Length: 213
Image 1 (spheres, rainbow, N blue to C red):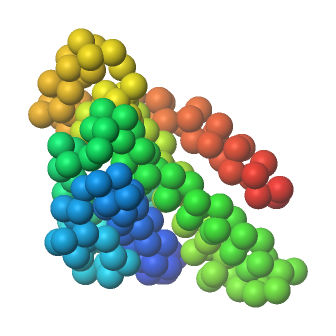
Image 2: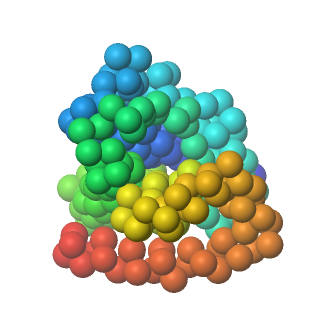
C-alpha cells in the first residue's frame, strides 16, 4: 500500500502536466489558425487550475494507480474551440485536434531524457525522479494513443472527420454524441486494452528510436 501511495504521489506532476499541456496545445493551435475562443477565456495557459477536472485529472488516475491497473488515463476540462472561426475549418480542424497528442508525444520524449539522467549512473541519479519520469512516459503515450483512436469526440475522430470525404466525414461526425459510450464499452469489455497494446508498443519503439535510447 505504501508503495502504491508513493507511486500515486509521484504521478501527480506528470499526470497534471500531461493533461494540462494537452488541452493548452489545442487552444494555442486553434488561435494560430484563427479561433481565439480558448485564448479569450484564459485557457491557453499552463496554470493547471484553469484545466483541472477533479474527477478526470485527479481521482480517476489516482484510483487507477492505487488499484494497480496496468495503464493510466484521465481527462481535463475540454478547451472550447469554435471550428467555424478557423480560416479553413475542415483542414485546420486536423491541426487543432492533432496538437494535443503531439504535445503528449513531445512530453514523453522529455521524460525519456529525464529518466536517462535519473538512472543510478546519471547526472541526476534519483529513484523517485526515475519513477516519476517512467510514469510521465507512460501517461503521455497512453493519452496520445487513446486520443488518436478514430472515435469522435476523441482527437483521432476529429482528425478522421477532417481527412475523410464529406459524406463519410458527416456520418462519422454524427456519431460524436455516442463516442463516450463506445469508449466505456470498449474499456469494460477489455477490447480497449487489446486495441491499445500494439499501438503503445509501436509508439514506444518510435519514441526511443527518436531519443536514441
